[in-house]
Amino acid sequence: MAANLIKIEPLSGTWAGDMDKNLAALNADTGWLPVTLFAPVNGRLFYRATPNGVTLRGFVTPVSFSNVQPVKIASIPMNTVLTPSGDDRAFILAQGPSNYAVSTLSQTGELWLVSISGDNSIPVHFDGVTIN
Image (tube, rainbow, N blue to C red; front, side, top):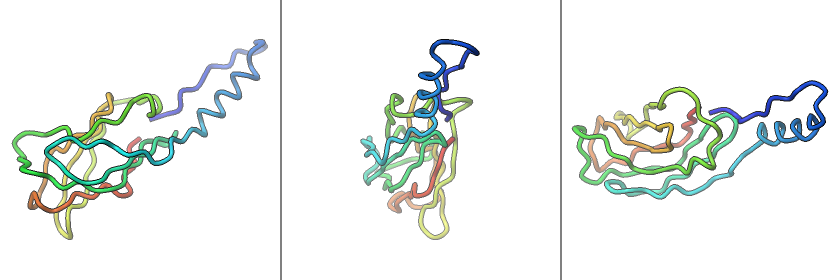
């Protein structure tokens, strides 16, 4: 994710206002916002969008999840996320002491749970995940 900056034209009459907008975009931060979770998961999940990316914290506990079919577990409103670039982002999460889960964040803000290595009843932790 990157800040949406305005190109500043030399000698333009709007350069000062454009510069202020660019500085505001570089310093933009939504603060921690709750994410509405979809079935088949329960838990608490929060996100924070900054120019450095989207940071997640919290956990989800799968309910009758199957590794056969990825499921959309949440949707992050894209009007709060700074201009995404590139492909969907995949990342690995901790699930208990020795297991892991794989998740993705799509360019449209969809958060997917793709697979789980452990028991479905063990929470999947998103703490410290930054996607950029």
